[in-house]
Image 1 (tube, helix red, strand yellow):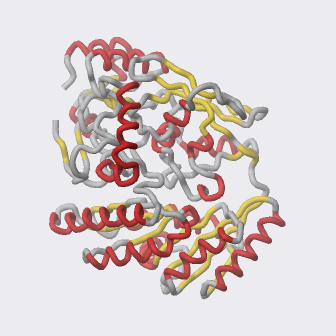
Image 2: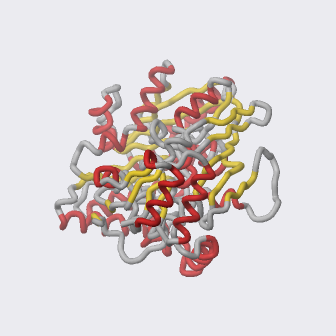
Image 3: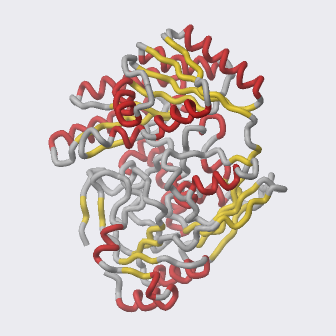
Length: 470
């Protein structure tokens, strides 16, 4: 628990209304969206501005009190679970869109802004913020930046880090720094903006962000390609990219996922095929029409049994929504749903899909696979029950092999979910001991007292899912 001195000092900054150490509130913020993983914080604190954040950090640094900055808790890697207690910082007061700058094509926001709210606000002015994580209806911009979130449009437009051009950050000693700005070019010193993006709250607390916008695409169309052969669907992805077409969205769903999503959404998705590709292109009408025609031809050459273009935007939106609800739909099958995000080069996609299926058979598990096929980011998902300890052991072994296969194929252990706690034991597979040493040196230099989201990214032992009480 917090010492009385730390508690009193923090309350003197934020007032008692913005400090809560009741059991109910602590329990509410003891977990995120990671299944079967939980740990109680000592208190919940809601600062009202950047200066209050800085003062809180100074106190916590002096008394070596852990800090976990938290958005909506939609991450899937245990990244906002307070594994070493301390305080959870909420941003419910720092939730404003500060400026939409149409001259410089930027938007400046506080970290607690909901992603979809900001997206709608800039689109009302004919501008576009492409990153669209699956949880965008409830995720916050601060959380997206901490996790470097991706989304369905990542193939063509990139991920969150590609749109973060300036930050205000409270570093672990309580200093407030500003990085970047409304600039098209800036090479003054180390790129601290990029260092902070994806750092999962381990290097500082983001209190403001300036994001790049682009003009809204003129038009978009959506297409569905159906396959009776998983490998043919995966090969179509590689062929589309090899033909120098970069669609906005190129998503993959296998038959088990299709069945569950259709039962959940009831929009008329085919469930008698082995896989579908959901393909979307945006831009000038002539480019969109040309690209869709070429992609349809490629899919048919690669044994697609049907290729259909959505007749209306309502139909297209239903398809996109169905894909976004894949996790929610799969979560209905069993009490526990383990979703991961192994990523490989696009050319290895077919091999990776086959490997996942073979691993599922080996461990006698049901693993549904969907994901951002266009950028090689697959989401193998296993419905299970954490109360079945023997099966959970098999689940953990299966995912360990899936990560090893991804590395073998030139990929990575996570494309967008982050490392947090759950992926930490596998990070060395990707970076090697030398890479881990460099990351630890950066962490030690900025946060010598290890107060910023401790216990994340760098593995201690295994990734076993546990409940930690305090």
